[in-house]
Every structure is written in structure tokens, then in C-alpha cells.
Length: 218
Image (cartoon, rainbow, N blue to C red; front, side, top):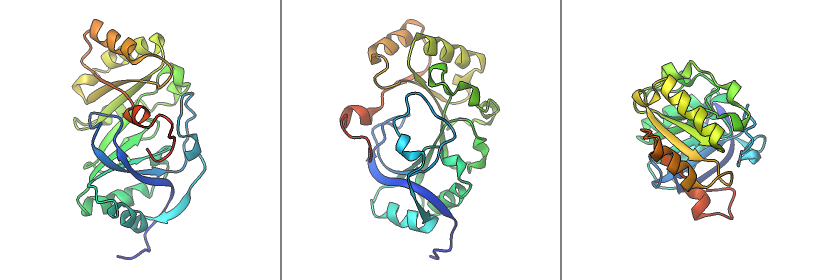
């Protein structure tokens, strides 16, 4: 395989437990790409804003293969800022990986091949980034995609609930309501979901509970 493939700026590649989405708990190789166009108030990967080294898609694939895991999550930062991410995904598809891409929802998700499971944030008001959302992405969702709300307060919860109902999101994709780690108690959000009979999946950031003192590589 030639190394003359497009370059991507990579912050880190590591194997861990998938901490979020309906796939939480499975072993997964994470490719964290450098760069983000958003600045969420609760961001726990600020080191990915600028830090990273250039790698070809072939070099990334070779590193992934070394972990012996067939699940791959491309994340950031915001991975869709780098157009060459599609070349990496093409290589992963040819190697028969199960591919997930985590995106902040501000960039057209249709740049991604259909075989990818897209896990898209809709930024709540307390993130400070809700106005950056590309709302046309909702019409681009397919049933295998997932939509994630990270909730910091009752205001966020009521907003997320309203958006979920307004756009009939539960008819479009898997909907996830999660707690912004350290901002509120998980049982509080779980209680609101149960009280309101929401057809959404409650989630925790499992990596925060498994490795509470570790920031990178989880």
C-alpha cells in the first residue's frame, strides 16, 4: 500500500472502551483528529484544538491494525474540518472496520460515506455553541445515526426536550441525553427523563468513571 495518500493532522490514536452512544462499553480504537471550530464551555479535549502531527491515511490505518480491534471511532476536535477524513474512511471500509464518526453538528454530515455511523451533537445553550448548529443536518440523518445532547442544567434539558419534539428526532435516529461531567448529578437527569416519559437513551461518559484521573488516551 502506497503512503502517497492525503495527510491528516492527528492528535492521538488509542484503544479504549467506547464511553458514549448506544455502543457504549465496546472496545474501540479512537483516532482523534486535531482542530475544532467550536469552543464548548465543558470541553474536555482542549488539547486537541492545536496539538497534533501529520500522518497519511495509510499510516493511520497501519497504526489501527496494530490494536487488533474492528471498531474504529474517528473523533476530535471536529473531524469534519479535515476533508481528507473521507479518504481515511474509505480505507477503513475496504478493511471491513465498523466505523463511527463523532461530530459537533456544525458541518454538513453528508460529506461522510453512508456506511459510517454518525454520532452528532446538538449543542445545548450552556455549551455556548448552540447558534453554530447546522440545522439542515437533521434532515440528513439516517436511522443508523445517533444524536447526542450534552446537558448541564434544567434549562439545557428543557431546551433539548423541546428540540427533540419539534424535529421528531426519535423518528429519525437514536437520541441520547447525557450529563456534562461534573455539571450535574446523573440521577437528576435520569429522573427528569423518567418523569417526562421521554423515548431517549440516558448515557454517561463511561471513560470518566473508569479512568477519572486520566485525561488523554481514554
